[in-house]
Length: 204
Image 1 (cartoon, one colour):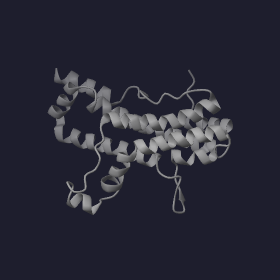
Image 2: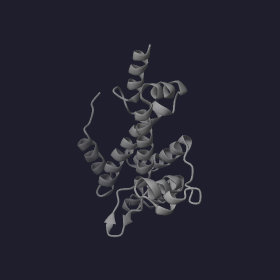
Image 3: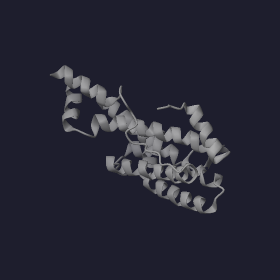
Image 4: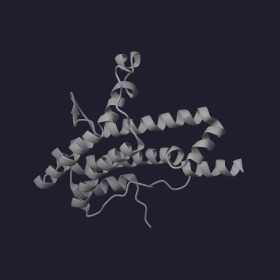
């Protein structure tokens, strides 16, 4: 099996989709893959087994609490960035919402725009967390969290957010490349699951 470098993959998208869509899609594709990788590490540690969570707490509870919070916020931040407006002031953003305007085919553009709208709705609570406590420190929220509550975000909702984002990417990928990208289960070795395996071995 031949493994292509990130530069080769980007060049493929540019050749297949043309500029500037291929450039934006290629870079976004890498960001989406990275976000799924972070989410996979989170779920391997904290979302698959109560036994694993107990082991992590027993091994180094404070450390893994910091890891859990950091990975969780990193995913919410990533979802927020990927669903940002195409432009903020004078600055252009690399987000899924920049893609529709780069698509020449009218029917595809309409489908992608609808999928972007759906992803934005799914990401609403993630963006609230980003705006009030992750990227910024909203004073009213921190002074009185009961009066300024943030919407709850479950693991199931995060999965829906990621699926909505990948739906945008795959709508374009299928049209131009006649293929679907599988973003789930992309890590192999040296990941959180391997760490858990090592800790279980030591604990025996």
